[in-house]
Image (cartoon, rainbow over all chains, first blue to last red; front, top):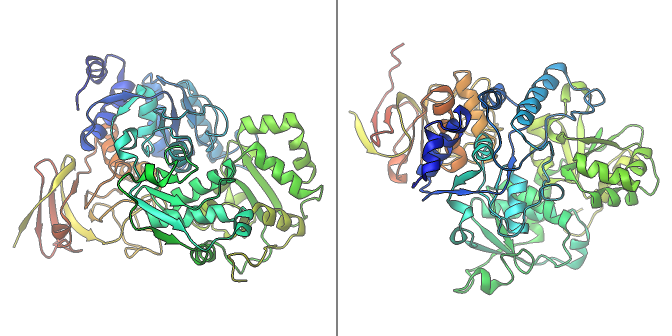
Length: 419
Length: 146
């Protein structure tokens, strides 16, 4: 890899020990993956913000103590907790303390405390073609695919280094030639009624991610009316079932206006995705024996303002059932927006609890006596048991709301479902 | 009889130990317990086996970008594999060993090799991985000298 004089100076410590360490890690990555040089990024999204293990805290604190400062605007994925409502979320003292240490270290280095996994819906939203360095699998997939910004799948630890240097090795999805579709997937047998149920998009993403695995796939057959929230859910589930950093939806996402643009030499033989495959995925993700969930978890990824509006419309003034906790996780920015609009008050008055900063998959399980959960997120359903020990049932936002109000699982039969 | 296999250096270093081999991919987040080094994914064929101090042979990494942090934590508590041998090492998988080297001064050499050579590696063998020179020396019947 060719380094500039400035890169070399950083490597020899001209900008301090934190920058030297960060640059060394980035240079090693560049050498291994045959980058030709370092290139600037306009902003960074750090995934490693959620307390899991002490190595993460040690890493960030050491860089902060060594004088590390973010060289470009750098925003943060969720914390493990709602940093402003620790008591309400019943956060144990040690978890709060470790989360505060991460918060202090990141703020000391100059991060913007966005604490959200949906940074493409508020805050520092990149534009088409913008070179960025993002962590968090759902955000990476959304930024690359739906926006057409350019980021590799930055791993924890490297994302912090990218923020400190503001430059990254030039390889992978930063380069046009590596962003082309490698496979074509076609939807077959789907009806307009199926797409009218929003539960279909996370499931389509989940199956698509399994098919694509580590390859860039183009998907044909998604209706034009798909919403940003549907695309968010699709990105999140595709990136949880496969190593999906970039996908193309023909006629919808910006790098895939047509089949001809995606495959200039003619499309390959398409792989077929059917309603049967969607039904099978749903059966694997959703525990059919759950009748009375204790928790309805919404906001994986973080709830948007439009999702809040949909939630309050579906509630129609009905209160959440006494036997159920209905929790929504969102960003501070969206919280402030829906508070301003009066929508938050509608949710609160129905008995919905709204948390910011945190992650529904990382709530303090030991503080709550929950056995089963329901969610409209296929990503949540995929990780729920391994992360929280809760059995999980999956359904659309409408089904989640009806369940929260009635105190028992309400799911519609038909469409792609067998029963 | 020792056998020498050609390998490509991903992360430099030298290590030796007992081979633990699988044809399945491994996710270090949600797949390996960061406190013990035990494979904790019940769907994995190495379920309940330890990667600590082993020459860990698996074809690819998979899953979350948090895997890199979990390798750093395994190194912090002395439960990391001694070395890793893959068919392909993607950036998220390489990140853990790279950061270990610069942050804790700990070497977890990583190499890749051709699938035909990779397939000859078996659990219980003894392997010396010299990532720096791009070679792996394998002998049958690992004998624990301890």
